[in-house]
Length: 290
Figure (tube, rainbow, N blue to C red):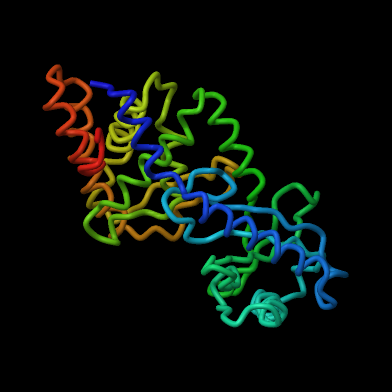
């Protein structure tokens, strides 16, 4: 059964709270102002914009982090990734007591505990196009297109009559309930899989079935082969979003997808209301349908 009303209520319950959204907004606006005005960054500064789940409106519960892209005018061919990140950390350390040098970004704790991930990048060609992003671990600059990801998400949401964003939230909620960290893919990997499998659903229940069965049908054969399939970025197809997904973690995820797909299909096809709701609760928890 589809339980459209129950799905809507459940989605409402996992939306970020008003206070969390307000704190995130204040935090990202403040850091963007600082990067634009700081004496060390203002001459190189070209743009700042939001990225990640927060920008794509696919986040749930508390907003754990806010991704901010800082576009700067530098020559990546003669500039070491480590240097750019260290430079940015030095600037941010003026304003935040706690900063962290990460693989491709600088983390900072803002007011009310909001975690900011500030990612420096420089344009490949046009300012609105793909960027070169410093990868400290790989010691190289890598390609990314955050604005392309946002555009792809917006387009897919429109094509599915709003089901894409809402289903991304549902699948992230399901993912958070999985038993091990290894079985939980990165947020954008999951969104990429949703792009590939959502189809054109007519209900939340059918969207969930489409996704879980689609992932199982497309990639179930890979389980145990010590390989991870290529997953082109919906916003920039030359980038493989699964590049860093280990085969062990991929297999752990597929081990959860197969029974979840079976449960979702049974829940959708069930004709008894009590039994169907019981099955959906196996996926989304006891609060579903309350």
